[in-house]
Image (cartoon, rainbow, N blue to C red; front, side, top):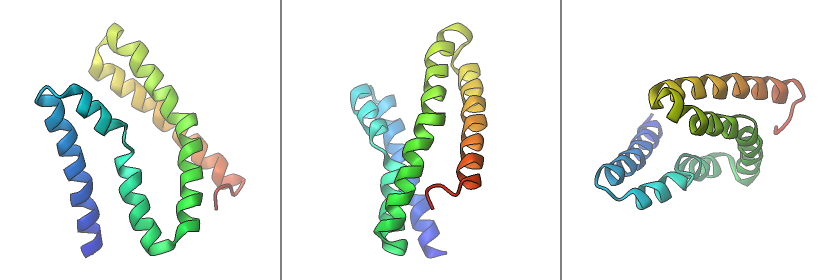
Length: 116
């Protein structure tokens, strides 16, 4: 339970830092911080400690291919839709696209026993 609290606080600190930088007018620093794969970085440190290097490697492969399948279409949707329908609606639609594709990716990887 203690480790879950540490994971929660660590993720929250990074998120708060990114928002703080953006709101303070440091857009380039906020953008750089957002580009750093903070959640995977923190997760891989903890996964590596508890499960070892092979688990981190398998997870990284899963995330890499999942990014291609779901994250890239999500970002393309945001880029295309935000100027046309506004950021909130674009984010909602983009997340819908993301989750449909991510769930399909998970189903395919589970069916074929990939990345295990």
